[in-house]
Amino acid sequence: MQDSFVHRGKRKILVEYLRQRMGISDENVLSAMNDVPRHLFIESIFEDYAYEDRAFPILAHQTISHPSTVAEQSELLQVRQGEKILEIGTGCGYQTAVLLAMKAHVYTVERQKDLFDFSKKKFRELGLYPKFQSFGDGFAGLPTFAPFDKILVTCGASVLPLELLKQLKVGGKMVIPLGPTDEQILYRFTKVSITEFEKEEFGAYKFVPMLGNTNQ
Image (cartoon, rainbow, N blue to C red; front, top):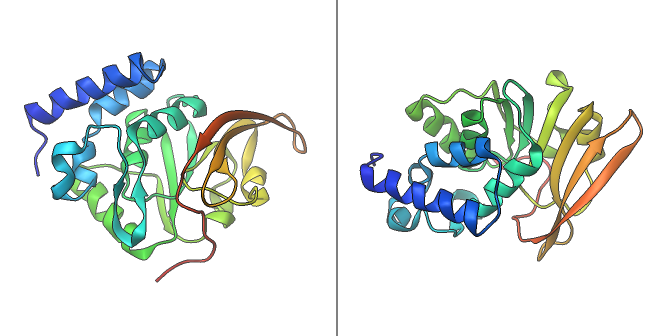
């Protein structure tokens, strides 16, 4: 699959939809969404619909999130160029690519081996370079590389992963969906001090569940 004029045109329409209909105002996010070819991260049978605001099935019974969800989570993270970001749930790599397009240094963790292998190959094909890509348990984070400026969790956790909060810098932010499998609430935690956090709530979403350990 190539990135054609048609694809780029559809991306422009998607970006206008995100701006006008979904209220995304962070130009850094909108520019990244305009740059990243989402159709290259999904199966070719969905290619014609890649720039609609839809989720699609990917490997390991997971899904690629709606573009509006990717844009909202990215906006809530308030990414600045050169920041160190821990992403939990690489998936097919689309959200990772958006963060890289926002000039962040991305450290990403995936527990499904099929998706880890797929995203690694995809990054190589597209010339994308996360700082570190790990096959492992997202609940454990990446303590070796901590602390992080920002943490983005792209799967729904039934309980707040305290280990991840420990790996956040003071002043840093974590965006995470929390709640039962059928519906989660999207939260943003800001680390005010070593032991204190501010919590903000941003409405109901449906994410694939966050699972412990790893799946070979």
